[in-house]
Length: 397
Ligand SMILES: Cc1cc2nc3c(=O)[nH]c(=O)nc-3n(C[C@H](O)[C@H](O)[C@H](O)COP(=O)(O)OP(=O)(O)OC[C@H]3O[C@@H](n4cnc5c(N)ncnc54)[C@H](O)[C@@H]3O)c2cc1C
Image (cartoon, rainbow, N blue to C red; front, side, top):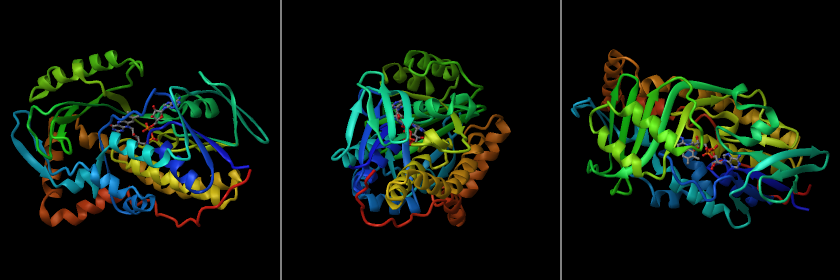
């Protein structure tokens, strides 16, 4: 009998894992809480070793076909005057794509041979020596050999298996909001960044010239905003940015009609162990790093390693989970370290810190510094080296 694997979450890590499991002879099922693929989110970039992974998955051409082809990011002051210019490699890596386009590509490449169930979620996991009985909010209970929590920062599988989120979440002191509005700034493969103390607005237009991708960041303590209450989230964003100045009033006007708001804290997840019995965590659910930590690339790398180790261990999940963790711990540490300090860089809290940050941008963005700069931005991306797992193996439970 083929080993059955239930994956919770059809974001990035979930479909990437489904792809590799199917390639290696497993039978994956993905259950996603949302009624359809969630195609929102800002752009994500790949560099270094991650490019090899995209090639190995056979998705690099599809990604290139949808890449943002973003040019420079211009830092402006509150009057709109240019103060620094960053080459595209800093923010956009070797190839950059909207998160939504990426999740669609991963879904399309994994859906043959994967069962996708939308609009449902796991409510209970009952493990015995032979497998896991899983109950769902809507569907009938089912049996699986293994269960993977790839359900993001607020993972339901993590809560059911390890305990409340608060035990593992460290907030970095910032919130982020991402959404799209019409391109009233007329940006053409260009991004603008404007900071005032404790707040930053980023506007960029890439592949779809009709649209501006907006990223707002603000310093804050933990906020009590319900995760699925979009109206409440929009209200918070408008309150925080109403007096920002620059072009922000128009962006907030556009937010009223935006149907793709992504709003969350910048947080990290730290767990001593990523698996328990037949249940294992992957991606943000296991190790969310926060911005600048190459979280998307690492989630995809983790999916590759997890599937590879499961195949190599011939179905011995204990061995596979231990090896997966051993291989990913180092890269995750690098990624979390890099991301932990980036908030203050993206959102300086004092005016003099904005000046210092802009000075650094000017230095790092200058031609002689390009190599240093590329090295700095590639550290997290290259933290995981890509193993060559053997050819597909049919797995028996
Ligand atoms: C819509 C969206 C927009 C995003 N935008 C940004 C952004 O702008 N900037 C940024 O830094 N990061 C963003 N992220 C997070 C980013 O995608 C991840 O940090 C990274 O790509 C790792 O991916 P992941 O698959 O581990 O988690 P995610 O991409 O977060 O995917 C998790 C998936 O699990 C689903 N899910 C959640 N709970 C359950 C449950 N109980 N049962 C079943 N499914 C569940 C979610 O709906 C989601 O589809 C966004 C995530 C989402 C879902």
